[in-house]
Length: 147
Image 1 (spheres, rainbow, N blue to C red):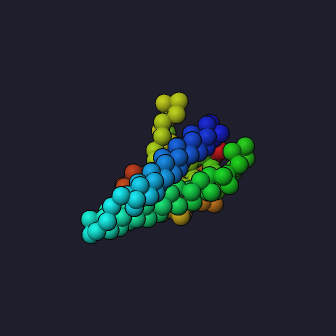
Image 2 (image 1 turned 45 degrees about the horizontal axis):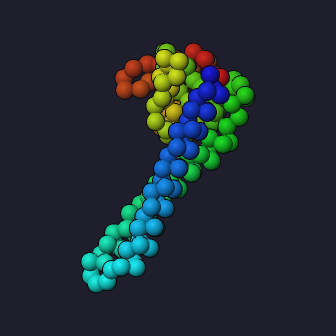
Image 3 (image 1 turned 90 degrees about the vertical axis):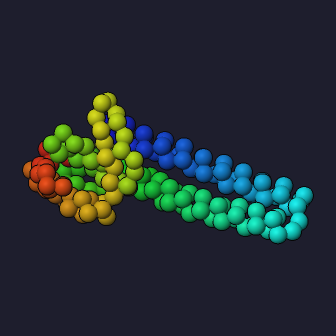
């Protein structure tokens, strides 16, 4: 199960990386084409807006690349007895993937929530094992398994 979760998240991130790179490339191309045929204040404003948009996209791309670096560190074949980076934790039929803060996914009709080890819940879980109990929004959970 862990291999499938990891592959799914890696593919999601790669798709996002490709989209952002295409968008950045498109803006660069637009700026080059705009520079050839325009002059004046409107031209300068348009170039500034494209540059600002490009900076935003580069920032988002950097965030995604940082998440990819984290996922690339995970060895999906490793079985954990204590919760650590790369662990899949089952608690009250909820599945948590300790990796990076990524979108919730559904695999084999199981909802998997990816969370960062630095998140408040991640900090609570790291280093614990089966039988550990914790609370989220007033609901009590018990770690049933660690993979």
